[in-house]
Image (cartoon, helix red, strand yellow):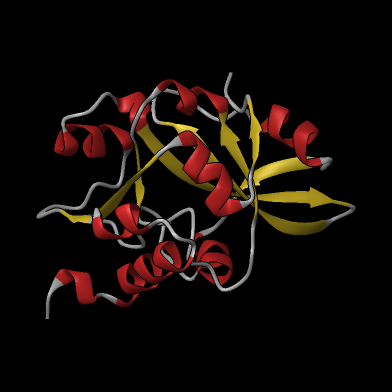
Length: 166
């Protein structure tokens, strides 16, 4: 079985193609080693770490009810949870546990793609990613990435462009 046959990668490829992002779907790269961090992904792809779109899943908590929040941040930044809470209108924003991530994205930490989730997830897209002609994002598996752009991420996710880093 080819790595491209992995269900997570197939789902991301199909979602990209259905959205008309054929170049992204056709550009999925499956790497020999897992790239679970932005630094690993950047090294493997030969690009600046800032051109990696980290997919971070948080719990946006309001009145003790947690909702998933996906933040696509430049690999050169760390997401500011206090800023995210304000942007999301939440009491607080917390890192999500692996089971929460899998429940809401259908994917595992280290391979969470911006797309291909069971249901839409509220998303913020780091405006710092606009500084790169090509942005690489996870493709549903820790060994896979796809090329896109800042505008492509916003369109694909229905996300809100925002300054998410400190």
